[in-house]
Image (tube, rainbow, N blue to C red; front, top):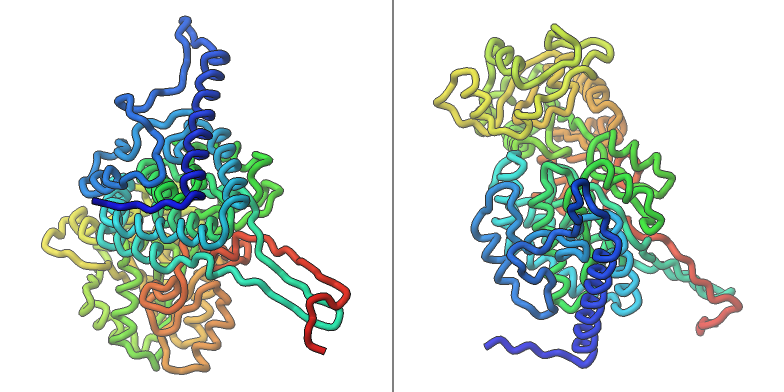
Length: 542
């Protein structure tokens, strides 16, 4: 028998939460009966009832077995098994209308900062971490089946990474300055409600990562997720809310819009209740949130280059390059996208790449793949670029994140299952110039290290995102680091080490290069508040 011990404060909080939820539902139902308009033909329009008539709320201390069972067996795309249909009052954080999602997050955040302290925050975060780990296979399968991107085993690894290595409240530090004139504290305070936008490439992982950091900082968050990942995102938001409630926390600290669109995003951006915007996606998204007039943190695109010089441990370099570029079929923005290698060691590097599971495409094979994997906005364009022509090319949506063997099967090669496809091309090739997010790695031979660095800087296009170099020469490493000036610079490892996977340091799914915050964590989502005790007060040392 499971014994649960509750303090008087716990009981009082549970009762208040239940009563508040009942009041909210009664008020919503009353408002719906009084004000719902009639649709054409005289039909009354009402909020959808929960599926099967089941109760959509959750009481603190309830079992997570329903979510566990749902996570252990995959559901068909488009079916949400955790909680049923969302009502206007919300279903474990999922709302039909963005206005309701924002209001619920606003009320939850007020309660959060008024009634709960740092130890409570950390308790809720531990519950989120554990829930993610308990359901990592289910979360990964939902993402894989809905988005049809990447590799299942790598999505499990990403969920584990975000659950274990996303910083919590330990990331928040208070700065104290003491002197003859008194004591000054600089504390990190929450913004309030954060509006966050998540990508299709890392939907559940970004929600988990953002939610842990934002809640650690004392905020609540309303998500406008990518429409192509809305169901796995819905499950993740409900999982987080149930974990928080079962740990004694308030509902709706994490909310989302059930049917995300550009219109719902516009509501979130313009809401006076939303104080901070955080966007993880492409350059268009970053421009949108920066144009809002609000504080915005934007994580944009990358096209990470790899430089290999003649001093590198080529066997080790090849292993690390394949690890990073093949991971989740190269849909990560940090993943190695092109290699610039000094010609003197290029053949040996390619030899080791092949020994680590890569496949070298012949010229004709590459041409065949180019015919379906990349498309150009310029009719009749050939796969070579000069000037800004590379901007006309982009990956065919249906081939982003697909397994390398599927590209080979499409061109009639059916007996291979490589980790990664290689091709030797010139610098101007579109595979070098665009962030193609496919398991295809172009290799460019260079006459010297200086030429390799120059090409790498140009191919990165000023994204300031991620770069990798393999070298045993400290001067060479320093030269490239100073030239490329990316947010993440990995030396002699895979790009994954830059976010703590096989490397030291914390993990993040929101790398804010365009707006300068870099690798985001709890402290990123705070405002600095100065508290001053003047006149020498509290100073006990003469």
